[in-house]
Length: 443
Picture 1 (tube, rainbow, N blue to C red):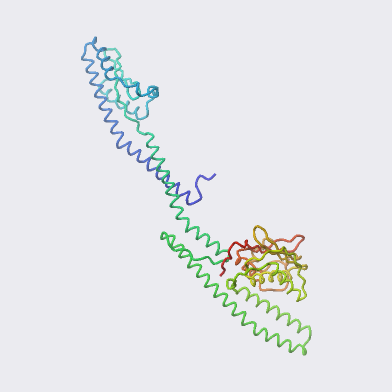
Picture 2 (picture 1 turned 90 degrees about the horizontal axis):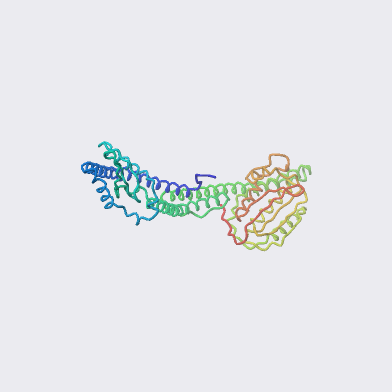
């Protein structure tokens, strides 16, 4: 169990309550030293003078009249114990301040040669025993004891102040947490590949500065992303023309060269063209495409038919997924990349499965290759990353296929998971949020 809270709200509330409690305690000690103690000393001087006067008066009286005087004095000074209740009469112990008062009075009268013994009389009075000429006499001193230094009012004020401090801390922290929660939400969206809306730059100066700095950061990242995508798209587009010329030249020279050499050169050109195509796909912004109601089943059938045109059979396990607002071209591009990845690095059979549930629609691409190391799954989703081992070795690629799928999934508010397949192989799953969730904006 943690005694010190982790949240800023808990720490602020604890600090404010502790400061108020210390302030109340310090105020009580100050009142005790500056007000109560001087009053106790003053009352002790008055009572000591009264006791000394009574002692001198009793000594001046004849011994036969002393008892009568003391009886009449005590009757006149009788304490109203019947109005104080049984609780007041039952209390016999002195409080610390009352003991200090009694000691102060005893010290003062002892300096005059009188040793006194005290007892409580009623709820708030004392009686002092004097020994005069060998005879003990009890004399009542009503109202001699001062009031207690700490009462329930002090505790009530302290508790009330602490409660008000907690309420004030909750109100203040709530106003402070709102902009901080917006910053956290925007940072999470940015980390997920989405572009959050600009944060309001209002509130306290420090919070406004944080929001302004975050907005500037998002703007700088967007500008850098646009420049990078523009450069990548420009380079890839410029490479397409010489590749087309090179392929045309190989086809013209095919009759004069060895067929095997020509076929090898054509395959190399096709691989280079595919790599350039991946560069263009990665540089393309999904935000430029408007979402339209699209069925994942229809996209899967289209991808399977396209592969069949090239002599590659892709199996289908369709789950009758209803139409969902999707960026159709981007989603098809993601599915094509996963299928190409399965053919390139895995083994047949390759299958596409679709389905939907409470968490939203999804599709998966299976292959029966050797799979990947689960520890490398997240690393392989990053651009230009390839498996470090030979488990999924194959023709060289740009290392952008899974990164493209990851960006498309994030653009739809979903995620890409690379999971081991049942019986071996890889199961690449793209999960999308329910249709009532809005599509996120991407950079």
